[in-house]
Length: 348
Length: 76
Image (tube, rainbow over the protein chains, first blue to last red):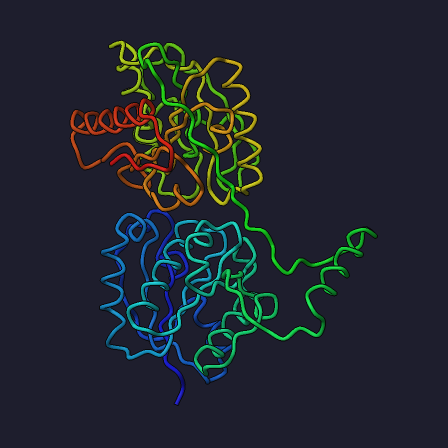
C-alpha cells in the first residue's frame, strides 16, 4: 500500500486564476493536480497524492487562523501519512501560506509536512526552524529540479529514514546541531582551519555565525506638528502609464514623483505597476495604497508639519533582497538630505 | 526597505497586511492594514466610510511615530 499524502497549492498552480482569484477560500479535490502530477511521477507508486487542497494566497494570509482550521478539517478524512506544499519559489504570500500550513499540519496531525521555497522567500525565515523546506530556484522554471528533491525527502520521512545534512538532501538548514564522531580532535581541526585561512585557501567553518540583521528603532518624533513626513511604498503606485517602466515583478528600480500641491491621488493620473496582487482596487483609488488624501488633510489641519514633496515607490514582488536594500539606501540618503523627519511606508 | 531607511536614524512606520512578514524582515513600528490589494481602504464601504477608515490607520501610524520604542512593536 502506498503512503497517502495531501498536496497544498495556491489558486495559480491549480489553474483557477491569477491575482484576481487570490481571494478564494480553501477547497479540496481528490487526486493530484498541477505540480502534484510531477510529484506523483517522482513518487513512483510509493506515495500517492490522495487529495489536493487549494487556497487563494491573499485569503490565506489575510485569514491565517481560519484558513488553517478549514484546511485541517478538509484533510482529516483522508487519513494521511504526510503533507506536502508548493513549491512556492519566491512567491511571498504563497511561501508564507505553505510554511504556516505545513507547521500546523505537522503539529496537529503529527505527520511529516514539507515544502519548497527560494531562499529569499519570507516564508523561509518564518518557518525554517519548524519544517523541512527544500531550497528551490526563484521561479517556477526551477520546478523540474525542486520536485525530485521534495519527493525524495518526503519518501525518506515517511519511511522513517535518517535525514542527512541539508547540503545532501537539499533542504534549508533548520538550525539543528547533530552529534557525530569526527576523525580528528577539535584542536587539530581548528589548527587545520587556521592554516587554510592563513594560506588564503577555502575552509568551512563548523559553526557559522547567525546573522542578526536588525536595525534599532529610530527615535520617536517629539513634535508631529513640525515634522516633515515622507510617503514610501512597495505597492507600486506610479503616475499613469508607469513612465519609468518599473517592472511588475523583480523590480530593478524605484521611482520618485512630485506630489506637491496634489490633494489626493486620482485614478486618471495614478495607477499601480505591481504584478503581485489584484490591481483593481488600487487602480480604482490609488489612495488605498498610498494614503495621500488622509495625510494631506492632516497636514492642512496642522497635525503634521508637512508632507515631503516627493513620494518614493517600487514594486515589492519577488524583488531581490539585494535590490530592495540598494533602493532603500539610496532613498534614505535623499530623505536625509531633504530633512525628512519620519517615513510612512506602505506594503501590499 | 524599512530597515535600509531606518538605518539612517529616520523612524519608519510600516503599514502592511501580513504582520508576520513585516516582523521577520525587521520593521520596528508596525501598523496592521486592511487587506493585501487594498491595505488602506475597503471597496465595500462608502467613499466617506472608507476615507474614515484610511484616516484612522494613518493616525495610528503617526501615533506609532511619536511613540518611543525599544523593540519591534505592533500598534493594533
